[in-house]
Image 1: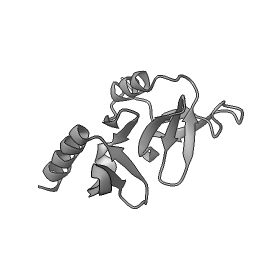
Image 2: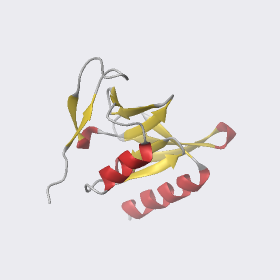
Image 3: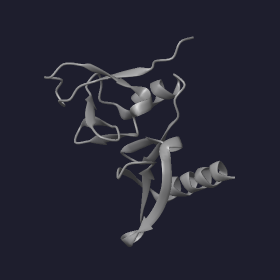
Image 4: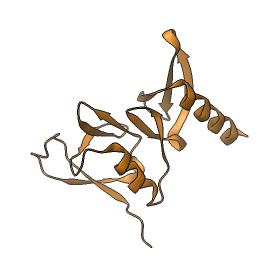
Length: 123
């Protein structure tokens, strides 16, 4: 079976600019925000306009060989790309992606799982 290597996205939330193919390896995280699915790379943000259900999109991606995991209710990330996690004021947890200033917010339960994954990876 051949897995997808690119995700069809648009630069506009309504798809007015048309669809481009985004390499899967460039995706850091996906965020459901204001009824749109935002797809973030290290330098840009795109929109997935071919559906609006984040859970279905993530299930399809993971069934295609990728490993996106929830960070909180509205975000999923490629945990393999997270290089460090820090606790900030107000008990907020941020996971930073290697080589960028981009980060995702973790819920407390997902923070613990990601922290364990980072620890296991460094051993």
